Image (cartoon, rainbow, N blue to C red; front, side, top):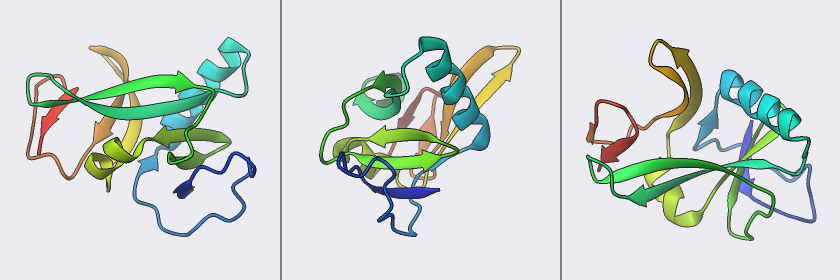
Length: 127
């Protein structure tokens, strides 16, 4: 897996560096691939972001995006791409994005070592 600024002229991101600051699990990558296949649009990338709000101060968000920004960081795993914008990146350094299915449902989850507190649902955090 590699982490680097997204280069729209290099879709394979062959000039990747070896530093991994944010990771995407195999399970999350498989779910993203399944969702992309379901949509029938190979240009889709998973965007992970942080917004203000939630019961602990910040919330995680997940969406699909076809058009990466020039300053996005792209994380590639098993043929899928996760994008993180620069504002969110500072809060997500060292984090791992996974996909879990349990009795409470199915969802993408972030394990964030920077969070000093999280809410019960795991969707919001404090620094």
